[in-house]
Amino acid sequence: MSACSLVATGYNNGPQLIMFTWINPHLDLTRAQERQVLADLGQIQTWHRQQQLPLYLQWLKDMQALTPQNIQSAQVCKLFDEMRESLKPLAGQLEEPTARLALSLQSAQLSHLKQRFEKDNKKWRQEWQLDASSEEQLDVQTDKGQDNAERFYGRLDRSQKNLLRQLAKESGFDGPKTASERLRQQADAYQVLQTIAINQPAQREANAMVHDWLERSLHTPDPIYAAYLKKRLDTNCEAAATFHNTTTREQRQHAIKVLQGYENDVRQLMRTPG
Image 1 (spheres, one colour):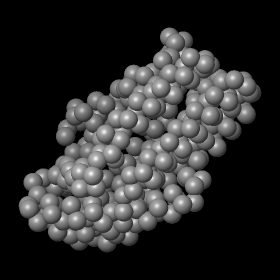
Image 2: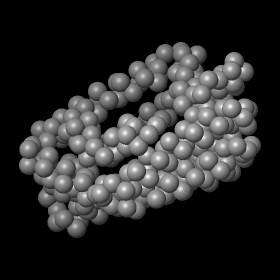
Image 3: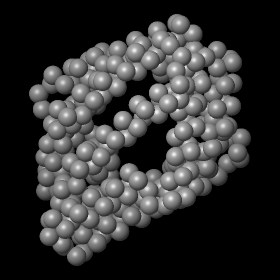
Image 4: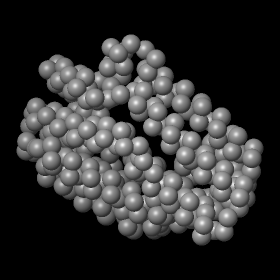
């Protein structure tokens, strides 16, 4: 995981990747819209490189310091909370560009977005096996957990794989509830973009509408889902600490090397001119 890894390459090509793998497939932009969005994304990336990559560097250092020892769930949640807080200023950077794009959208592009959401949801349900048996859904959760664990710790033994399955079973994941929140967020996004595109408010008013939408994306207005999410986060922090505390010295050394690789990537990216 050197500075020329996929992490660094992907970041440096971030505006193009976001444009051509997500924004354009969902909205079918015109050439003029593409040029404006790429320019906006380039400015956001420059800000992100200067303001947020240093945060990533510190988190990686903190994780390396924790890795050799047994940890508590509170330590995991502290890191996660710091990462989540970093999304607020990033959302602030997205407000005006998103509003500007929304003001230029046509009805055909909004229809295209709705169709793409439907396609995304079908794929997401298949990925998480929401229409399969509970055992098959557990298989998916276990496989994802194992992939993540092996990415950091390397090869796992049988008891650790069994533990991951048990932790997945106890995670409290509710597929239908998660799918419902996903649909709420998509409907919210569509409604805001449609309202701005049709009503053509002043830029400042459009910015405010996008601000409120992004705030609802980061903090769901559904109190039931918010309580569910809080419980899930607490459970996942406990699960991460529980699993880490079963790892061997060799596995922890493997994780440190992986984190050091990411750290080297971030340092290189911070030196790259915006």
